[in-house]
Image (tube, rainbow, N blue to C red; front, top):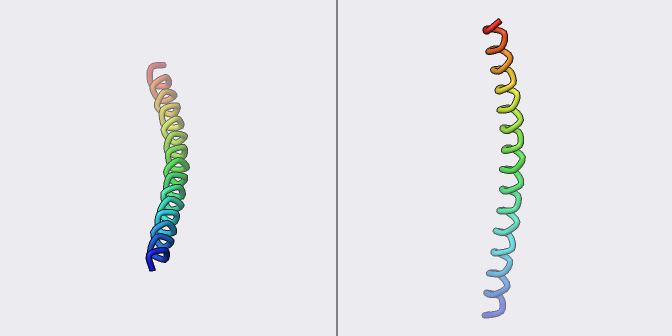
Length: 54
């Protein structure tokens, strides 16, 4: 009985670790996407500021 409890606990921890890894991968993907969008917006803003000064 005690062995089954330990195996269930280990399996639960392993599943939790896998879920955290998937969540971390998703966060990294979204962070890269937002960073690229911010760079595009900054470039556009810079272009607009340059055109308004001319």
